[in-house]
Each structure stands twice: as C-alpha cells, then as structure tokens.
Image (cartoon, rainbow, N blue to C red):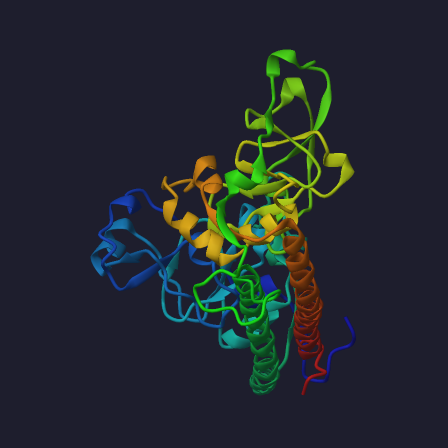
Amino acid sequence: MKSLPKGWELIKLGELCEIVSGNTPKGLENISNSGELQFYKVSDMNSFGNEVEMCTSNFNLTLEELKTLKIKVYPKGTIIFPKRGGAILTNKKRLLSKDSSFDLNLMGVLPNEKVGSDFLFYWFQKLDLGKICDGSNVPQINNKNIAPLDFPLPPLKTQHQIVAKIEELFCELDKGIEELKKAQAQLKTYRQSVLKWAFEGRLTNENVKDGVLPDGWEMKTIKELALKTDKVKRKEINENEKFIYLDIGGLDNCLNKIENYKIYFWKEAPSRAQQIVKINDVLFSTVRTYMKNIAIVNKEIFNNQIVSSGFTVIRANEKVSCHKYIFYNTISDVFLNPLNELQTGSSYPAVRDSDVFNQKIATPSVVEQHQIVQEIESRLSVADKLEEQIKTSLQQSETLRQSILKKAFCGELV
C-alpha cells in the first residue's frame, strides 16, 4: 500500500473492531417466526448483491424467544459475511440495517466511535473473502483470518467525505449499469420477437395475416419431423472402454451451446448415461424447461457419444426438416411456454419425452426452413455482437467500482 495521507493511521482490524461469530442455539427450529427481531442465515444473503441495507430475513424472533434461547443481538451497522462453506466464494457482505442476530455460519464486524459503519462496509466491499479463507475442501474464515488485516483509518470527518464521494460515483455508475441491463432485456425481447416472426412466416412471406399460416405451411409435431434415436445396450458394452458424456450441467443456457463434457469408463458410468447422439442432434433438457438448457450437438468429437437421459434427443429427418429450424423453435417462448405448464414434480419439475415430441410447430418446406434459418441467424448475429459489447461494459463497470474503492482507501478519492 502507498503511504497514507497525513492524519491517517494503518491499524489491524482486530485492534480497531470487535469481531464476532453468530450462534445457532438448540430449539431454534421451534420458534414461532412471528417476532420483530430479525435472525439472519447464509440463505438470506444468497439471492442479492452487496446492498448497503440488508435484505429482510426469513427468520424472526420475539423478545421472549430471544431471552429464552439466550441469543445475542448485534447493533445496527454491523457488517456480516459467511464464515464457512461455498457461500464464502460468493463474496457477499451485508450491513445490518437494524439491531439483529445471525447464525453460526456468519461472522460479524462491529463499528465503533473510531470508524463509521458505512466506511467500514465499503472497505469490506473491496475485500475478496475467497483469498483470505482457509481449507481446501471446505472454505473457512475465522478471527485469525480477519483480525490481522491492515485497515486504513482516517479521521471521522474524512471518512464521511470519502463515503459521500463513493456514493456519488457509485450512483452514476449504477445508472450506467441499469441502462446496460435494460438494453440486455430489450435484446432478449428482440430475439424472441425474431423467432416469433420467423415461425409465423413473416421473414420469408409477404402480407402474412395474424393467426393464419402462409400457403404450403402445416402444423406438425416434432415426432413427425424427427428420426428415432438409439439407446445404450449396456450388456454389449466393454466396461473398460471410455466415452464422452454430456449432461445438463455442461450446457450454457444463455448461449445455448455445449461448453463442457465429462469422460468416463463404462464401469464408472452414471446411471443416466443412456442415449447415443450424432452430429446435429438437438438436446432438449426435460428438467426445468424454463431454464432453456438446449443445444445442438455440433462437434465431431461428440458424434456417437453418450448423453444423459435428462435430455430429449431430437434427430431431424433431413428429408422433411432442418435441424436448426427445429432448434430455433425449441428455444422460442411459443414452444416452451406450453411445456412449462406440463411439468410435474416439486423437487425436479420435468416433462416427458412424449410431451416434447407431441409439441406442434409451424412447418414449411425444407427449402423454406433453410431460408428462415438464414434470416434468423443474420438478425441474431447482430444481437449477439451487441450482447457481447454489453457484457464487456458490465465487466468494465465492476472493474471501475473496484478502482474507486481502491483509491478511496489509499486516500486518493478526496
């Protein structure tokens, strides 16, 4: 760290602040959950960013329950963060917006008369918890990891000035990020509009009437457009042979592409390794269809390899259908929304293969299908380039945020 401005002090965090761990007393599972005192768990932090104010907890205690269980209350302004498990790597920190309690999987750092809670919180914003934790299998953070950290401490007046400047700059930055995310949402809408127009025939036909298919088009099921695929015959397989395995986790559901794969010996193969795929097959995840885990098998190394039974494998009959035409249909909301309604099961909501194959799509001749695919891809390629630019800008925004914090705690911001 560069030399600090005059009047600043470099002090160990453990010498400046009280560092505490939460507690989870016996009997907590029996509370009424009807009180006013918030009790935070790691799960209360998972779905949100690093807001200055903590999100509402899902667990609340009455004053009587607080006394009975002997739960300690920590003051408004305490910074809390995960202390064990994978939650550390999410790097979430929160500022308690009122006096509250938290469980033993969270740690807290308390402000005092020497350091303001907002100033302390912003310092924590630039701290990467993943770089200070212990444990190779299960990450952990203890007092020994936090207490020795060097903390730059300016006078309180300067702290207030720095916080005001950070918030001013962050406000402008957040406005830019909001606009970028709005543009992302508009691109998503545009993509779905392109697909809707395509499968109404508007990209290749003039004067299409609402709700009326162009001449020569028919409504056909996926089953009518597809060929039968092969299942694995385990009895005929050499258990010592290797194979490439594709499962749902290997798909990027934003790009709708295969990103990763696994290699197994058959003797170690998962029970779901049941289907043989070929080039140009469409993989459609039947679990949580709204997640759009859909992709085309587009690399030679995947030809005649194995995929999870969690996919419906759609193999286009090229005499009557184009595999890309089917693929673009499957990622359209018009195709997916009815399937989303058919899902059953609470833990793993899913549809059956037959549900997918019975879905009907508007189908022109094979020649026109290829024309439609070209029209779709020419439009979506422009959207993809814009999307990439937006992602780059969002990454640069986060870099700028960290740069602002770095300057703030080196004394270079005010």
